Length: 282
Ligand SMILES: C[S@@+](CC[C@H](N)C(=O)[O-])C[C@H]1O[C@@H](n2cnc3c(N)ncnc32)[C@H](O)[C@@H]1O
Image (cartoon, rainbow, N blue to C red; front, side):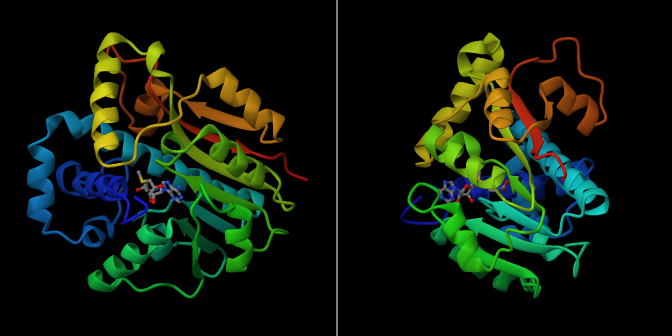
C-alpha cells in the first residue's frame, strides 16, 4: 500500500456500490457509492454476483456504515458534535453528501497515496469537494494523527466524532493504541465508531474458514490483518482511556439491529463487531 492506493479501500467501496445495485441500498443507501468506484455499474454488479461468498461482507460493510452515520446524526443532534474525522477514509462518500453542511466540518484522514487516488476518482466522477471538507494526509504507522489533524486546522476544543471503518484490523496494536489515545484526549470530547473482529481462535469452524480465506486475500493485496480483540479486553482498553460510553454490537446484534432481520438458528455469536465509544459529556 505504501507504493500505491489501498486495494482494500477499492474492495470496500465496490461492496457499497454492489449493495446499491443488488440490494437496492436496503441497509445503507448511498447515492454516490457507484459513481466513486469509477467502473460501469453492470461490471460492479456482475463481479459481485459472480462472488456469492462476498455477500456476507457486503452486508456487513453496509451495516457498519449505517451504524456510523446513525450514531453521527445522533451526536450532531443531541451532543453538539461539530467536527467529523473520517479515519482511513478510502472512498467513503459521507463528506460529499453531508446533510449537516454548515454545521459539521469534515476531515478525511488517509494514507497520502490513497488520498491522492481518491481526489482523482472524485474529479473523474464530477463529485464536488464541499468548502467544509479538508483532506489530512497521514500514514498512521509513521506519523501521528494529532500532527495530521493540527496541520489540517482541526479545532481540539470542539466535541468531535471519529469514524474508523475497515481500518483497525490492518493496524498494529501500537498504532491502534496511539490513535485511540489521541481520540480520547480531544479536550472538547470525542466519540468513535469502528469495527473489529473476535480473535480467529475463538470463531466457530465455519467462521474460521471464512476468516482464513479473507485473511489470505487481503494479505495477497499487501494489507494483512494484524489485530483482533477479545471484546472484554477492548472495552477495558477503551474505558481506561476515558472512552467509557460503549455500545458494542456483535454479529447477531448487527443482523437484528442494523439489518432489521432475525438472525438464523445457526447465526454466529463470534465474528465481526461494530462499536461506538465516547467520552462522558461535560
Ligand atoms: C479497508 S480500507 C477502508 C476504507 C474506508 N474506511 C471504507 O470503509 O471504505 C482501509 C483504509 O485504511 C487506510 N490505511 C491502512 N493503513 C494505513 C496507514 N498506515 N496509514 C493511513 N491509512 C491507512 C487505507 O489507506 C484505506 O483507506
